[in-house]
Amino acid sequence: MHVSETNQGFNTRAVHAGQEFEPRTGAVVPPLHFSTTYAQDGIGGLRSGYEYGRGGNPTRDALQEQLAALERGAHAFSFGSGLAAEDALIRALCTPGDRIVLGNDAYGGTYRLISRVLGGWGIQNKPVDMAALDDVRAAVAEGEGARLVWVETPSNPLMKVTDISAVAEIAHDAGALLVVDNTFASPYLQNPLALGADVVVHSTTKYIGGHSDVVGGAVVVKDSELAEKIGFVQFAVGAVSGPMDAFLTTRGLKTLGVRMERHSDNAQKIAEWLVGRPGVEKVLYPGLPEHPGHDLAARQMRRFGGMISVQFTGGEAAARKVAEATRLFTLAESLGGIESLMNYPSEMTHASVKGTELAVPENLIRLSVGIEDADDLIGDLDNAISQL
Ligand SMILES: *Cc1c(COP(=O)(O)O)cnc(C)c1O
Image 1 (tube, rainbow, N blue to C red):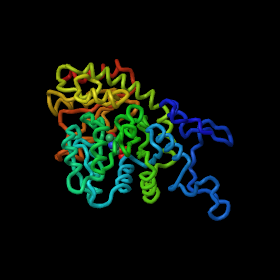
Image 2: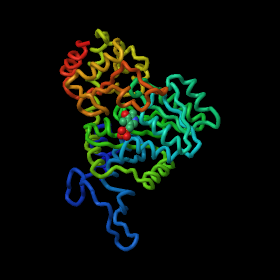
Image 3: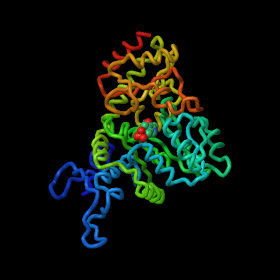
Image 4: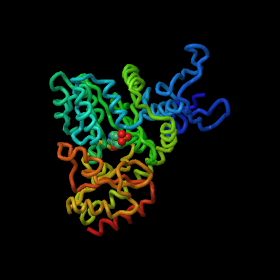
C-alpha cells in the first residue's frame, strides 16, 4: 500500500506520500472525509483507529503524512492557520516563565502572538539579529537559558538569511530547541530538520497551499517525545484544520516542486532586472551575488525562492506609488500563491509591529512573484517604476 518511501525524490514524495488509492473503489484520489464521528463495533471497538474528528480525520492524516515526508520529519500536525500552529507548538513546548529568542525581523503576527497573547501567559521574548551569532549566543544563554530559538530564513520581509546549522548548535549548547519558520522557503527549497532544527513550522496558507484559497498551518518534528506533546495540544485545544482545508492543501502541495522552480526562475529574472533601475535603491533577494546571505542561502537552500523586497530612493511616497500602480501584481496581503502579489509591509502585513524594534522600512515593498510569464511581470513593474 505505501508506495511513498523516504529515499524517493521530492516530487515523487509530494505526489504519493499519504495518497494511496482508496481500497474499496480504487479511487486514485483519496476521498474527502467529512464525518465527525465513527461507528464502533461494541464499546471501544474502533474499526480503523478513528473515533472523533478533532482527534483524527483521514483527510487531515493524509496531509500530515505528506508534510512529514516532504520536511524530512517523522510527525506532522495540521492546524487551522499558521498562527494556530505556532500557538500550539509554544504551549506544547514551553511553560510560563520560559523565554523565546527570535529574529528581530520575525513575521509581525508571530511577534504579536508571542508578545501580546503568550506574554500574558508568562512567555518572555528577546528579539535579536540572527546574523550576529555572538549576540544570539548571549541572548540564548542569558539567565536560566532560553527555551526556544525562533528563526525565519529567508526572513519576512527583509530577506535576511540565517545559518540554520550554526544557530542549531548555539541553541543545543544552551539546552534550547530550535524552531524554524520555513514558510518563505517551503520544504522544496529547504529542510531545516535535516540541518539540525528541532521543529519546523509553516503557514501552509502560502507556498504549500499555493493557490491563495486555503488558510492553514503545520508543525513538523522528528522526535517522538516532542510529537507527543504537540499532538496532545492539537487534540486538547483543537485548532485543527477542517477536512476541506486539508484536502485543498494536499492538492496544492502535490505540485510544490514545479511551482517553486517557476517562482524561483521568475524571481531571479525580476531581481536582476530591478538592480540598478532608476528609483530603485536596493533589491533584497538572496539569489543576487551581492546579497549578504547569498553564499549561505546557496548552501542551505536548493534555489532562492519567489520573494523579493525592493527599497526605493524616493522613500515612502515612491514605494506607495509603485504599490498602487501595478496591474498584474495585485496589491494584497499574503504570499506564495501562483498569482503575483505586491505588499507594502509597513502598513499591511507588518502594521502590527509599527513603532516597535521590529518595524519595517517605509520605502520598502515586498513582491511575491507568481508563476505568470516573467516578461509580462517585468513589463508591469517597468510601467509602474517608470512613473516615479
Ligand atoms: C503568514 C505567515 C505566518 C502566519 O500564518 P497564517 O496562516 O496567516 O496564520 C507565519 N509566518 C510567516 C513567515 C508568514 O508569512
